[in-house]
Length: 334
Image (tube, rainbow, N blue to C red; front, side, top):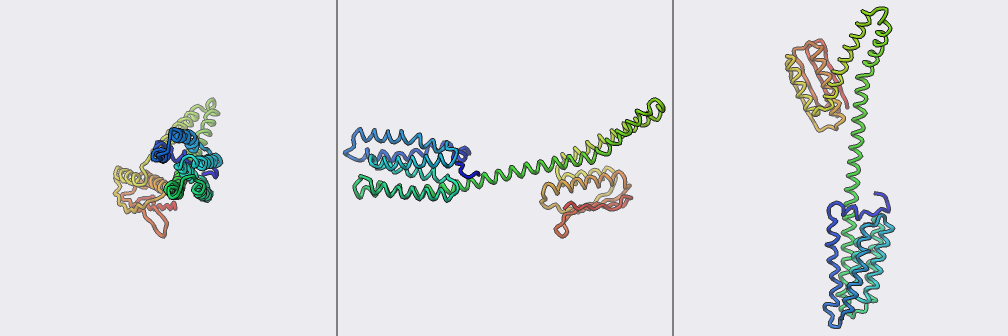
């Protein structure tokens, strides 16, 4: 998270926006004085309405504040309203609690703690200047003192937790993007290795056929047939490579290897230990296995094959052996 950026609206966007209206229930403390003071009149009820009318725009402005400067201004305005309103209504100290709830989202945390500590001091000032007689003054303002600390600390914890969760989500997104880029680069390298030489041969043969077309048409025809054959082989290799990219991982590749060997009448034995592996290593092993099995089936003339996957000295290995002409292949991707 960037310093100075307010994240109140980000937190509420996760499905708790409706809570901002529920929290307004605490404004009910403003009604205690006119409701229970026998000397109250219509003016006291009008004061309650006026205080709420001034507070609500500040309250919702806090959720829209885009940075700490604006949020701090809202918090200061709420605190000022609490101090001024305390001369008219003893419940006005509730505005300090709302201010502490918003101040908890200031960043860094030490700034939030400092502002909340200042608000606790403001509650003390309200207690000293309040026109309410003792001991009723204690009952009127002690809850504000306690809840300013409690709500402020709880919201600081929630804000830090939400920041940590957002950092984790951003890290996961970055990792996913890097993995996607790495996979694209791998596919690009594979296709380059697969097609680079083949296309070069096709170009050379096509140019040769063009030069021979008039002088030696028979030979030119042979060259063009070679071009067709090479192109078809390249197409088959590309299709095989794409099928490999769509494979179901190393375990799926092992199943495919068993089927391919069985279809070629090659007796197959496997000794596999499949620990949890990073995607890059598993993909490398799957690709190596696919290439090795292709060589066994096409070129070795083997009757038996043995596949072993495991870990030796913190090294993951793949070993494919057979009794044909292909000998032993061992690939260690990492």
